[in-house]
Amino acid sequence: MSGSAAYAWSVRPEATDGSEITAVRRVNLTAFPTPNEADLVDALRLDPGAWAPGFSVVATAPDGEVVGHALLTRCHVSGTPALALAPVAVLPPWQRRGAGTAMIHALLDAAHAAGEQLVLVLGHPAYYPRFGFVPASGYGIKPPFEVPDEAMLALALDPGRPVPGGAIRYAPAFGD
Image (cartoon, rainbow, N blue to C red; front, side, top):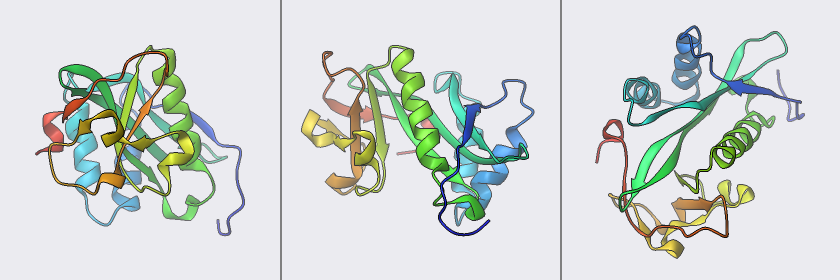
């Protein structure tokens, strides 16, 4: 695959029977320069306080191959439950074709349907605003480590509900 043509992506929850764990790890190992993200997903998968059923999605190619993976896991802001978006990974030959966008939309829809209120992401400030993310500092939300203000982003899924302010507490697998 080459070029920048968009594709009508098939995005679905990762199989709950564990049959796609290897494919998800392969996507994360291939999409990033180090194994850190793949190892993070494996560690989060083992943490029942972080892993939420239905919030790990895959994008598949026409032949059914898993070519993308995105994940929301439980975090907290001043003790209030929230979700962290990380990682979002697509195999290089399939990048820039809309797979990441399709997976993020699917995850945000699933989070909203589940009654979640807040999604946080440490990510590219030119990419995530297209989904409605804004600097988390605008809500008084602070990460537990130093990052550029414009890279720590938040999305309130229901503008009619309050958004907690304060410090983010990630799952232990994220480290400090």
